[in-house]
Image (cartoon, rainbow, N blue to C red; front, top):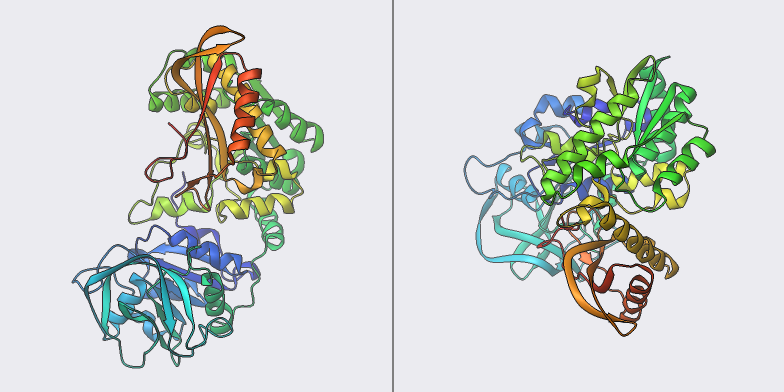
Length: 532
């Protein structure tokens, strides 16, 4: 994991990054969604923790506008996070969201206090005034659904501001100083539960801040190819292919940038899905003609995993073994100077967040952790500015097939963590067959692209069944499918009973060793998406 600040990868002088929105992170769990919504409107944005954002930083960053995120603190208390005081004198449009609105009000002379009436979840706001923020979207007298999450309230707004939206418990649900282009919203426009939120954010970036919107995947692709060529020169690059979206997009981009200077290494761990190895080889070696080393290390991995039941031990065994095998194969590639990784923007911002972010542990297997240092290689990370959905868009821009670009997330440790209890070759085989049938039925029903992630879990539980008038004592299979936007929260997918009956029948009839199928309806939280 490279922990350099995200702004180190972008230059305000180039066209692609000439329109930039700075998002100051006060610790909200949904700050990433703000950046995604801004980018979806065609404007580049970066997130930086509040304690790194100074007056000088803002001037150097040169944003067209600033957004202050939500956060867990109370703006009315002493020694709580603040925006830099110089921000208010820079002539920049500023939008404060939830805590961002509170600290804006407090810093500019208003008053914030704890409220006896907290607001969490969906609520209705009544529009009481006209504003450039609402133009073409909301008008006075309207009521609209928004999503709230706050326990404080603004008792008094600063001079120059006017209230333009209210709720029964928040008289300053939206405030505006049109002259200075300062706006504050108590609700969260970045979440899907505020249906007009993306339009409001676009009004702020385009109509108020004057952004045109030049952040496109086509422009990014061309810019990144040029960057890679400058960085690599005539050097050789190694890329670890996992079969997932991120590494596949990295490989395709690098191949377009540097051609045969790239060699990919694909390690078959023995805990991959049905036909995954053949698919990777066919696409990258046969279709793209990319030099590819295919190492079948399944016997080694399964041998080390045999009988291991602790999920963390499984991950460590797979991660360490992968690094050993990868290093062994990479050492055979003469003149290699660079290692390509699929580091994404969430990885970058989590590594520099003042809170550590929602996921402080980045799995070493995913990003080939430890290898650059061990092998004395320089890193190439062409995706480190992108969110997952942007990676998929880039994949389409590069001409990768839909089945590769749209495939569901797959954990680095593979099927091993979908086998609670001990891992054996027999169990992996049973699970692989069942998982293949499940995904096949999902595709046949036209539901694959509606689901964030779907998979089967072979439980360490055997139950009595009857098949062909004979008693069976076989394994229970759990099916899991969720909807999500970012993987941070998730709901179970509402399959029809007929669909589940069809899937269950096929699995039990076609896979020896399973006599019972159940469906997991747990949301995240309290559960996780994966079982281990």
